[in-house]
Length: 370
Image: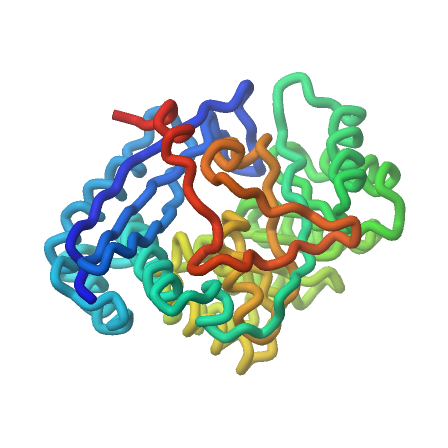
């Protein structure tokens, strides 16, 4: 089997109102869609994060980089995943750790989709098949204009009514005590039996992160995600050491070399690798092996349609991040099928080959960025 064509396109669906976390504001749900075809008629689809700023050039850079890398891929056998990955991760040629690695990620996901489709099996089974059902939490709780405590409570209760027994909210955009009031309101609304995950998106210096970690103990937080800058591993380690709330991080880390440093410094209790960022599924496998060796649970960040396979494939699975259309707006139109939460708060793995979901290209066409 040989690769015959590679294309990348950007799609964006604006939010009705911008949403904000502790550090960033997003105006649209964006994805870079990569399609790789072979001489045997099998097409693989890779999905890359497109960012959410209306004027940021990052999405265009990912598309351009994928199209530049296409020349390296033509004629390759997609089963040679390691050789292909090594040919793309060339810092002197394509760059190192950043948007170019995100381009590699989207390509690599498409290649693994081909490999699993050629085998006639779901991706998670090809990768390892550790489990066929995973627990999930619904991610939300963003800051929005006009969104007060009652609206935040209503949102989180809606997730519980949807079947979730774990929910996630954002903090870090307002003073600590104001965020404590928001956390308290959510805990009071959802009760003590629902796990509450809290995400700062790198908003704090480590002194404030330590203070917030101690505040979160009072509300029995399931984890404290990305308390400090991804480059401040020492601060993350201090936060983890000085609070009983587990620290989770990793969504902004690149390559297994970066994750090795996270583990060696004790910066995380739970790791959140994102295959759409760190270098694709080929590199995610190495991160999963490291996590298993360090006995650190994995809770991947990013689109559930990809990461459900990766969570289910390897040891140390913890929980799946699950987005509704209020966050991942393109999901409503991107797939013919939809992953659904059960009333036990779990999601069953797709049974079809590859990613197990088919792209609705006709519906996506409306959102293509020219």
